[in-house]
Length: 167
Image 1 (tube, rainbow, N blue to C red):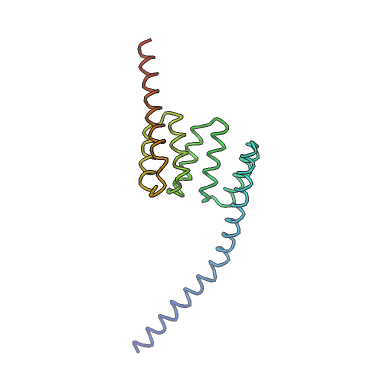
Image 2: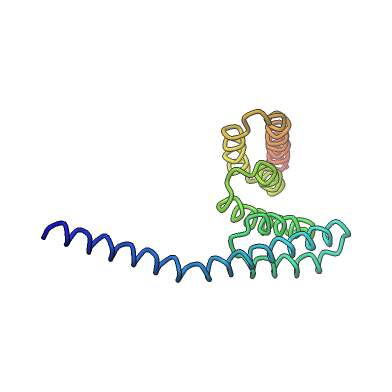
């Protein structure tokens, strides 16, 4: 009796698993379609940005994010677009969102550091550099230049602050 009950339970579990696979397969196929579309739009957006067509790049990256809201590279590129438009604070915010999705993206972390330094968010730059150092492995050539960028900018900011206090 017990064997029959176990076999019935196993069959039920197997049927449930097969049913779930059948239900999720179309969603996964659609997801892959949108992921691919997002990557294509992102490539077009990068080309538009390289050609200094900022508005077209922004429109294309927005479409890429609509197709795949988890496209970390699209957030990074959108941050670069905002930086090109002079909106450094928004660029930093958007790059940080991209890094929340893909935290080991070294070029994006370097960009985050540069943007943070530009708007004098030195603590955020220090934290990002610490992250960079933890994950860079063999590709750590950027650590010293990024550290120098942070330190030099912090020192220049301190000099300006001291000079304005004297006046």
